Length: 151
Length: 420
Image (cartoon, rainbow over all chains, first blue to last red; front, side, top):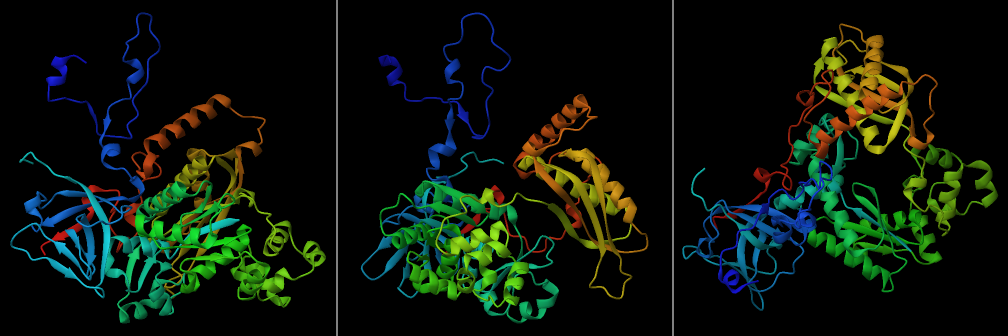
């Protein structure tokens, strides 16, 4: 790679959004002439699924309703990528079931209790005690949001 | 050693993953047309609800106890099953999926404590997918099944039960009803019961000569496995599927021949599709129709007709043609038909296909190509095209309480409440 290429800070990649789409490989027969050097790499394009979902079997999606996490950029309507296979750690963004309902909060683990921390100054932390009906449903690994403000 | 991983109340558990508020409530899942209970939670079992009971018979119990009922959402269950199996695959080297909620795993290479290993599997599947499973571990499949029943029944096992000594095996078998043994159907169980054999231990203790002289090879193998030998190596050793039925209960009674024909040709086309998917062929077909037997105030009629096909086939067009002919033979006007179905019998695989004398090779290949095209267009469980004679009958089936496609449709994913 030359210096001028390295300095360029915006790379445009080709995106393959349908990861199950099979691209035809050298379809239509072999023609005489010099083959394209790129022919061997026809199937190489970025697959967002494999980038974002490291454990497909345990990954689920959820949609945010409400504004209790807006200060860390999680808005109403955003889609959460939730991996159930990850061990919950202090500070993780977690989808939790509390009183039979899903919510998403940052986990703050203390000695005798867990606090579910909102990211919105108008909300108060939710305190979880030992006897509460509470489970961590999964850990949020990514947030998908629409940035273009039109339908 | 062999392990059996069995999902607990699988359909109910799938629904609960996405509806945490149902965790300790009684839940039932109903068959395709909300006719019968096909799965129930432990809480529903405790209320006396048994698998197979028609919904109308338990309406009062359902209402009085506020039981939550779902229509079977089999696309969701299929996806959850795939996830469970993928998780097992990532831990165990050798897994053999035997049904939507069950898989055998080979434990021959496991050196650690087997009960601990089993509990690790239970924990992993519960955490990764949210589905509770039970693990039975034993020297063979039949005993692994027995062990899994114990793991499910007694919480003390923490999800995994190991039968690794003769003593444990005898104790477990003495507590297992003969009809609950894998491979022993209700008919044989009744026969054994008449001979005084009520539990599995009594059967296992029968002298070998008696067993070999009285019972068929499958039952002999079951006997041998109950005695600790390994005989049944894969599920494929079990006799191949002999019949395949597609049938429905309609939401409303069908009086017109035309409506019934639509339904029957549709079932026939589905039979063809299933056969092709499994690489099987059939050369006999049965069509049955029946009125609503619960409406004793209406005139009752039911009948079936069998047709032999020219040759064994998996071609929807030929199957539909014969199904229509069979229906014509039994249809009587003036009745309200509630139920119909198509059964393929005398099913063989490709190896056992008999070539016929007068076959039109060219036409056959053309048809096979057409079917393959239809199947590939309809791949992934979505029906995009079908034979004109087999229109969409989804409108005639009932889906009252189908849950969402939480894992398959973006608009159906779970909602995360951020109002608190």
